Amino acid sequence: MLSDAVFEAELNSTGTEIMMVAAEATDTDTKDGYGVYVGMQIPAPYGKFGLEYNYGSKYWSPFTQAQDDPIGSKLATRGHVAEAYYIFDINPRMFIKLAGLYYDYEYTGSGSPVGAPQKVDDVMAGTAYSMLPVIDTAYDLNASLTINF
Image (cartoon, rainbow, N blue to C red; front, side, top):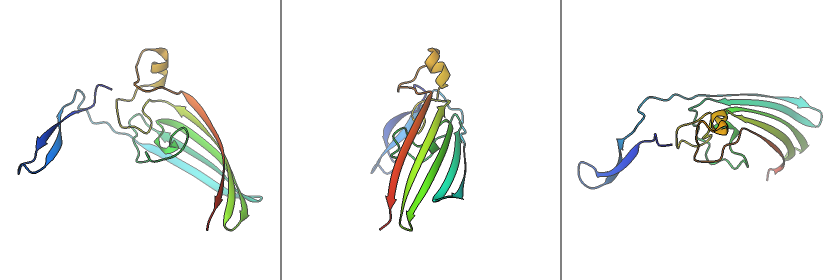
């Protein structure tokens, strides 16, 4: 917040198009981010059992903004996410999935490239600020039925 570039409209060299050009920025340092995603799935009675783990760094910004998860994409999280699930095979074209996810956010702005990330602990302590509400930890328990036609 307040460190993003300010863009201004300018005409291109031929005067036929309007382009948005960065006019100024208060922070011009390069920001590198990374994400780690590992998981395993093993056969189990009546289906499969799986465990997955994800970690996103302070400047991690993936391309998963279209996710429809209630909390937000686990792959877009700036912090830790662990998931355990069990898939019950009903028949070759249908299964039921029971899953639980635990989110432990370290930085604000998960899934959003807008604004500078702040440490969640600092925002909750009042020493840093965030434009959007901040969540420290969250749980997502869900069940789904998938049918292939």
